[in-house]
Image (cartoon, rainbow, N blue to C red):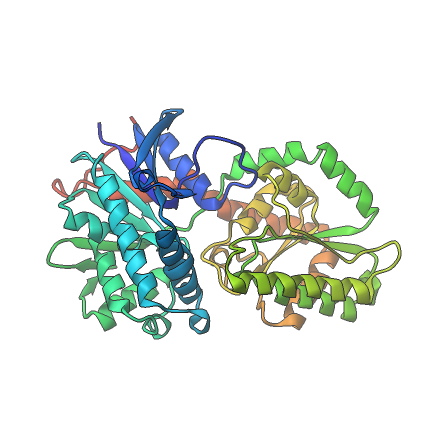
Length: 469
């Protein structure tokens, strides 16, 4: 039986309790649960002490195989902390100025992808299909092809893809982009991202394009946009239940009659948290009637704390929160509640449902599933208002949100005031448009669309290999 093999940098093993499942994990588990047979392959998240731990190991749980490998400390530093997160991440988010290129890191990045390919090759069958996820694994298909693998391989990039004017600032960019041509299908979050990639291939590599299809000597490569979604109806039901949970009621009690504004982001410069806090301060300055009448809850679990830039960012955000609370706070009112602990999806769904306003204002984001989760969580009879950055991929679908420029403090501050004062009829009409939009790209449909195109039988020229048994 043909297997769907999903490959990602990190594999979440079915052990322990994960508080906050990320969008990638939810997407992968949704796809694997719908496939006749499936395997999730990637890094275990552990740095090996013994060399033998670098050999992949397999375990099974609920009908899904998990195959993982550890990394050496050198691999972790060069591949993950180095090239992936200090070079590719900033460049893909349009921050060429923050990239710190090192040839050692590039070497480690290629070495780990080759290691993954060798470990994966051991379990591949001829009719398997492989779905590779995200920027950590751009060269994986090429590494597999070099080992003689002929299976159909798809790739999905969860981050934005910048225009060629930014990408060419990456040393050896031609090598990485040529490696991507080892895939049969390359998916992006938005049409703009797909266009940026296609424009690069046409102008920098001179490849002819026809209907977002490129032909190389080895294969035909398809390029398309597949906006990732959330489990819309399931999340809505979860929010409806969780709004009655004890901790949600306690939170509402602590607010008194104040309106809740919420932001949920991991600590990363792409999220624009400091800009957002400054915009909230501008709102308080320009709208004194709302002081003591709103509370802004910013939930920001820390990430990549061993990278110095993130430690600096943590201090900057904390200082900005302290400044706002010190300037505008009262004995009985704290304007900003800043929390660094993670919360479960269930807990967040209840918080989203009680929030009158959500601030989702990244400086650049591939999609941003918090925006879609907030929409799904709302009570359609009394919905809140989504304020959404024009630079989030979700803005292309969620046009009924209040779309803002996250760099413009007045623009965001005025949007907060507009959202808080918005009449019920307008809130309901906007929410219906938003809910209908995200339901069209529910996460199960997203995986179905990608895999149906990837699994198209190239011999018959159009038949589909079934996704389900």
